[in-house]
Image 1: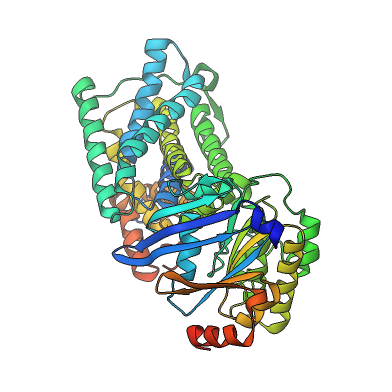
Image 2: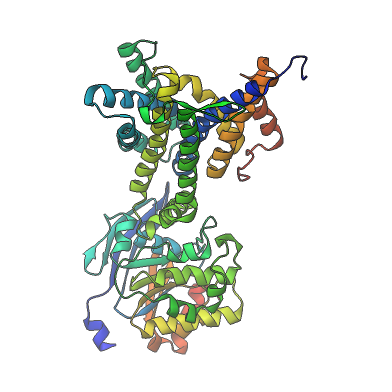
Length: 295
Length: 240
């Protein structure tokens, strides 16, 4: 008996699962934001809209070209990532060296335009996207039913997060990225094409958002508003984890998803605000975020 | 010297101007470095020595004039393309990447040509580095940072090196180690442009000198010109 009402194991594990699912999306999206912020020093306000585009591209691939979920998992991040690279090459590149506020405003404008276009075309209601047959069904774990697709989303997100962390922290390509983040001028003077690295990094971060969109499509339906709904929480996650911190965004993403889920069990009234309360507390105690380096 | 005079210069700088934002720092720098030479830029603080190296590399805000490297005009090229022609810089601030390990720092600059030093050679020159490979780049002492900053441009195959005050703030034993390294590189045919405040050190490794004043080259002279008369003039110009 907590807070005056009984909590069943079913309820607890059910919300824990939803928390982990949401946490997977928070982690993938804030990871993309962290990668982009680290390298380009911009806060990508278009991230939610690009996540939504990822889901829509999956939908188009299926219904226009007959390419199933597994193709979408590869194709959508590539297509939307390429679109992101185009935004960087044509628009963001012009704002380099200016106050980050300009690129923030630009990406915000891009987000509004993308959302507006999709809303005009498809309305506000959602389009269904079926769970791939290989992942339908559920397993009875004894204490709860675990839908296969949800288990897949959690496992695959964790894998992608780990792979991204490994790529950036442990490989030669990652060393190039870290060097270009720390000192772009000298990195370039060693013969590395830093502007191209910046474009590819933005495309990669956007691709992660699109991947999250594909994963979300069978769970949440494909809606023009799906990005707006999630992005406010994701920005809070980024602030709590520490701007630009790779590990911070992953750990904070999953953790806050779970915290949100548990709040729904123990004090449902606070479940929509708990993340922002945590953000406020973290900002008061550690302004650079839990994993952020002191600026 | 006669042979070297005849060869086309590795680097020919003429009318080089450079700006940092609004301030005009270089006002037409002219000099050249011939293959296999060690040439030192001398001059007081603020004379434009560091800016000259950065302008040659293409990492100043804005530059104009002519920089011909290996027979090719590079004034319009970005720094990554200049680097790939076989030029490398070891900047005054050393620019060791704190977010990279020592090994990652060492392996960062891509190969631009065959014939770079092997890791074995590099560790023979700088034994300390071999022991610190797993350390973070930010954890090194000043001397180790300087060794790493020089070491990492030796394995790229670049045959023209620009070293900006490699002895600044270092202990005499490390200065001697760096002096030996420069002598060895020269012996192997590397061409080196050095910036030094420490004329005593520069005199142990250099073939020729240029003295910079107010963003221009004042005088140039070779080792053979270092008689009492010239030393007097040099002392006046450098204020030492």
